[in-house]
Length: 109
Length: 139
Picture 1 (cartoon, each protein chain N blue to C red):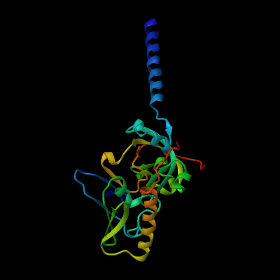
Picture 2 (spheres, rainbow over the protein chains, first blue to last red):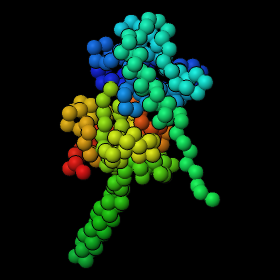
Picture 3 (tube, each protein chain N blue to C red):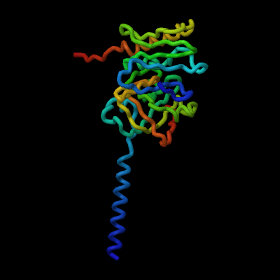
Picture 4 (cartoon, one colour):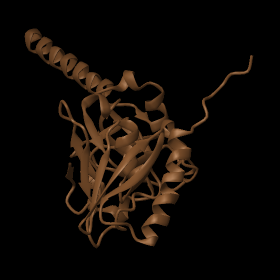
């Protein structure tokens, strides 16, 4: 993925056969592996593009993915701090509720 | 002399029709909600959009209203900012403000093979590089 320099987002073009994407959180400018606290953040690629989304921060590597319909962040290398665990869990609960468990609109008979 | 007058008249007609044509080409002022209601109608077209800008860490949002952002109002009231360089360059000026923007509307980033983190919606606007972005009074 490419990023707007120092601008805290990432964009990629999906090439044929793409299996996953990966991006980094800028050290010193981000909260470790913790994603955006308001929008879908790193779960965006999982939800909208059906792609696992790797994240690199402070030499560690994690991957945002969907497991049995539930978004999660799994560390591939290194581990999260207690703060990152708590903040990421809050994020994922919110994303799950807002984007994966949205009730479908129904019309009364 | 009458030939000269005819030429002037013809020039005026051509100028007037051109001016009228330009007025028709000016994009209507829309909101993210209006764009999301008819995405195919505006896909890949120049649009002018009024909305509440939120730019930050993995946030490239344009909501119809601030309340939609606060309530996390869902996809239908928000479009993503496909390239927010101009907004981010002066983030303090534009963030959390109502702004009129102009650019090309993209009904689906995913269909174009684009993965964008920090998008609030698969629909987006690719901002025009020249259009002067106008900040509106807060509602």
